[in-house]
Image (cartoon, rainbow, N blue to C red; front, side, top):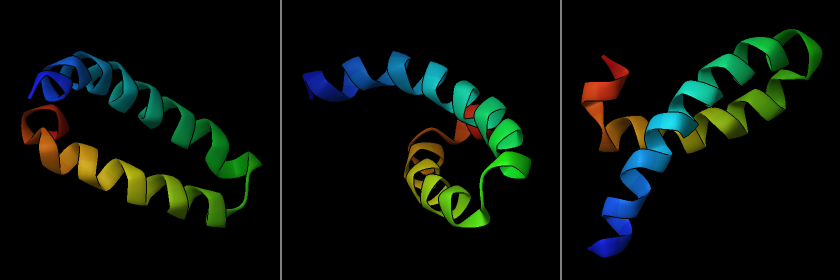
Length: 53
């Protein structure tokens, strides 16, 4: 339970950074890498729907 609370603030910055990185890496890196990153972002967004909205 303590780990979840510690991950909350990290997710806030991680989700914001992931959005910026996804836009920058989209044209530069192949889509394959974006797919793997999207799969990791999905659980983070589902965990905190308030941030995704």
